[in-house]
Length: 204
Image 1 (cartoon, rainbow, N blue to C red):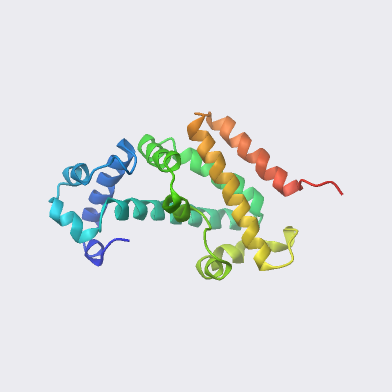
Image 2: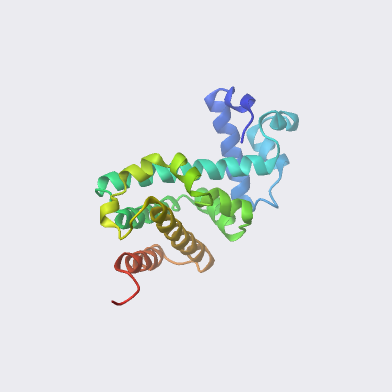
C-alpha cells in the first residue's frame, strides 16, 4: 500500500504518478518494468518515489487493488439492477470488463498481470481469504445477493459459490488474452460456463 505521504499529495500529482505507472506496467510485465521509467514519465526524482511507495511491487499491487475495488463497486450496482441475481450480474460484470479492455493501455496492463500471474497477483484479485474476512470485507455484496435464488443453505456455501464464480471468470479472462479471442467469443464462453453453473451439472 502507498505510504501516507502519497495520500498527502494533491490529487493531480497522485494521478500523474498513477498514470506513469500504468504506462510502464502496460509497456512491460512487473518483473521487467523499471522505477526509472516510472519516475521519468511522472517527472519526479527517484528518491521521491520511495517517499510514496516501498518499491515497484508496492505500486503495482496498489493499481491492482484499485482495479479490483472498481470492479467490485460495479458488481454491487449490477446486483442491485438485477434484483440480486448473482449469475446475471456475473455475466454483465464480465462484459463490463471486456468493454474496458477497449482502452489499449488498460488492456495491456491487465493482460500483463494475468499472463504473468504469481501467488501475490492471484491473492490480490480473488477471494483468497477465509469466511470471516470475506464477510467483514464484502458486507454490501452479500446484502445485495438474493440468496433465495441459490440452492444453498448457509452463508458459508455462498462464500464457496463466489470462489467458484471467481475462478471461472479469471480463467476466461486468461483465455481471452492467451488465445486472443474476439469480444463475442470471450463473452459467449463465459456466459456458457456461468449458465452451466446456474443450471447445475448433475442430473437428478
